[in-house]
Image 1 (tube, one colour):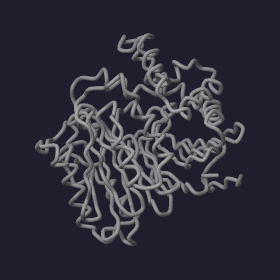
Image 2: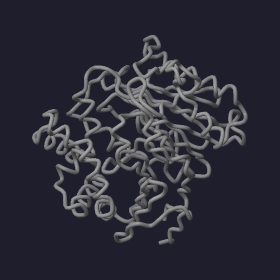
Image 3: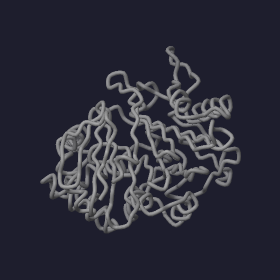
Length: 388
C-alpha cells in the first residue's frame, strides 16, 4: 500500500491500525483504510469523543423532550442495519468495536436526520445551494462546483468532518463531508471524479418518509463507491425509490445534472444545456407539471441570484471565483435580499453550516465555515494525497 503523504497543514492527532485522524483549522479528517469493518473500527476509535459531542447536542435533547424514545432508536437503527449493504453493516460492526457503544446508539446518531424529517412539521427545514460551471463557463473548461450546506445552527457546535475512505475490496475511494457519527454522502467525490450532493426536497416532493424503504443515505454511500461516471450515477439512481424527498446534484468531469426525487412520485432529472447549473430546494424540472414555487428558505431568490452571478462570470470561473461567488450573502445587512446565497447567520429558517468548493479534475476540495462564531476561511484538501 502506498504511503499517505498529506498536505503540510494537516496535524496527525490519532492513529488506529491503518487509519489516521488529522486536524486542520478545526476540521477533522479521518483517513480510513482496509475492510469495511476495519474502517469502522478505525473511525470509532479515533472519533468517539467527537461523536459523543454530536450525540450530546443532537440526540440527548430529543430523548429528554420525548420526541425520541428508546423504541424509536431501536426501530430506526434496525431499519437501517437490516437493509444495509454488507459494506455498511460491517462498518457499523466496526463502529461498535471501536467506540464501545451499542449499535442502537451508533444507529440513531447516524439516522437522526431522516428521523428528524419523519417527525418534523410539514415545511421545508433547510435551504442548500449548489452551483456548477464547466466547458464554456469555466476558465479552463474543467468542472467547478460550489455547495452550501444549510442546516441547523446546532451542527456548528461540533467539528465539521471530511471522511476519506480507502477500501481494499475493489470499491472506489471517495471522500465525504459531514459531521461526527453522521457518515452519509451528503457531499462526496470519488476517485473517478464522480460527485454528488444532497439538498432537502421535502417542500416540493412531500414530507413523507417511508419507513419500509432502506434509508437513502446508506444507498448514496454505496452508489458513490461503485459508480465511475455521471451517466452511471443517473442510471443507478433511476432504479432507486427514495425513502425521503431529496434533490441530488450530480456531476463528473464533463457534465452535471440535478435529480429531483419525490418519495411520493419518483425521480426526474434536470439537465443543463449551457454548461452551468444552479440547484436549490425547489423542483425545477417542468415534467412535474407544477409551477415553480418558492420556499421558506428563499429558494427562488437563491436560484435567480446564482444564475445571474454565473452568467456574469461566464468563461472566468475557477476555484477562486467559485469561492467568491459562494461567499456572496443572501441577505444584506438590513435583512433584505442580496446578491448571493450564503447565510452565515440565521435570518430565515437556517444558516450555512459549511461550504464546499470542488475542483473535480484535480480531485481537490476547499472547506469553509462562514458562521462568525465558528469561522474558518477556505481551507484546501488534496484528496489524491489522502487516498492511499
